[in-house]
Length: 397
Ligand SMILES: Nc1ccn([C@@H]2O[C@H](COP(=O)(O)OP(=O)(O)OP(=O)(O)O)[C@@H](O)[C@H]2O)c(=O)n1
Ligand SMILES: O=C(CO)[C@H](O)[C@H](O)COP(=O)(O)O
Image: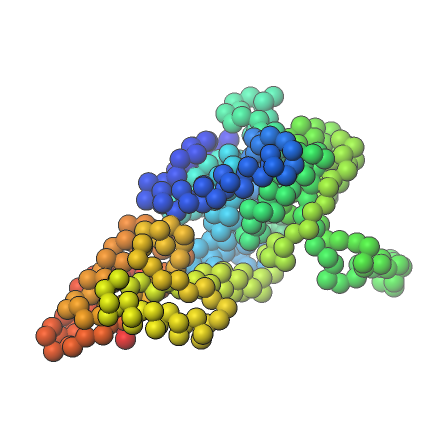
């Protein structure tokens, strides 16, 4: 087993430059975790996650395995890792990658500062990759450096939009029932063709569900199932819940998942994923203004106008920039009223740079300036701001 370059096997500490961001996530996570006690009447278990990421993405039809395909310039798998690592109660994340892609994966972990990741060698099928991930957590394996969790989440590396609430739901249900998985209503009816490609029979759609990910299991339940299962299962099986039923006699509890849990499979799914990401990061706009009378007045007017125009987007005003950055807002309108330079915008850009927010998503800053341009030439002021722009998009009206 290899450890990710930036994390080693179990650093729970956030990275130095993202401390604020991850700190806020951690606080939110901790309060969610307390639901274990309140809702399920049980204590919080030790949880780890296994991510199979060793496929070749044949159905995508591109040379790069889909988990490494870029979406807004960042590899797909990095979004999935981000979704899992922002859940502070997941202690270890084991990613199964092929030997051929090991260096690529290490590079991704380093570049996007992923934490708590350990890498294992993938197998030739998804089930074999998962089994290798589970072995990395099992106490009976030589050189096992991670501790065995009570509950293990299994989640495909190519399902980037997994939210904390569904993770919590499957983990809580697994703790109670031994196994649990997210399901969705079927979109199309499932039919069985006969050998001569005629309809043999069809299933009543309302009685069936699509099995999605994440799934969660008591570690011993799923590890024993994988240890007992046949080569045929490992070669051709597609359902972990089935292994838990067949070999550990555990009937999984099924929980409703969100529509965004679907698996990126075809090329068009990359475009769909990009749209979802863009939609998510454009959900909030922050108008940055001072409490100074003029500025606050203009800022409030703008805020009201934006709220009317963009009625599906949350518009907030912010004096406490650090807090707003911590809450992961990616869009800023920065007011500069009657000031002779872009001091406010400059300060915002410095804070954004310091927070490293833009390594995960593009950040947009619109600087609005109301003043008399005669005292200092406009170009000169812009030059100063431009130095800090980098990946941050800044436009001035
Ligand atoms: N030998 C394999 C095959 C698949 N997977 C992983 O299992 C998940 C779900 O599988 P699937 O969507 O079928 O991925 P691919 O096998 O890569 O896709 P395709 O079937 O189109 O080739 C993916 O994260 C994939 O990387 C894996 O870890 N090891
Ligand atoms: O669908 C699933 C659960 O039941 C799994 O998520 C998995 O994606 C199936 O993999 P494959 O497409 O390789 O069969």
